[in-house]
Image 1 (cartoon, rainbow, N blue to C red):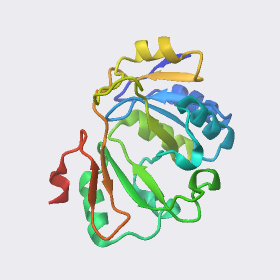
Image 2: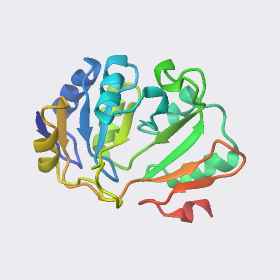
Image 3: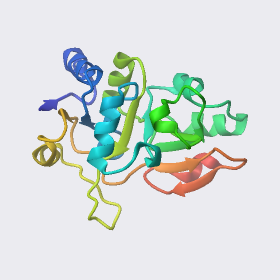
Image 4: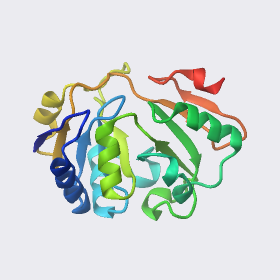
Length: 207
């Protein structure tokens, strides 16, 4: 199913339909402020397993992110962070950044296993924000990309995405063309902030 949504003022009924899908173990493809992503409700184990099968990875090996509407979810899933890291996050978010932080005991066991970190995203995208706020908890998310592509280019046309994935996922959300570059990944789980991947987000936020 392809759903067209206004990226500036998402229609409330469409958002409710998406949330209903997510709460029923649905898997969606949706726009962020960087690339299109595959997502599900982090509390729905069947949906998480479905995404893992789709990506051909084991849950404990996956590098998923939790997409939040703001930083209020931070303490729910991560251990306390330093003032330095918090200031960087305040400068960077909402924006195209993924912050790797120490996970706490609230991270679903299926995802945590032997991993001790979690990726946190707060995209600068009204559709993401509306979905997460209506859902009431973060979306488990991973970038949609072509595994045969050696360069950092990802699908950006929702019509093309729908054609390829309509039989695999429950919904494709058309919020307009996406970017072709992924988020910048910053590891803040240690004593220093380490750049794991330089993507769309500027590293000026570290200064």
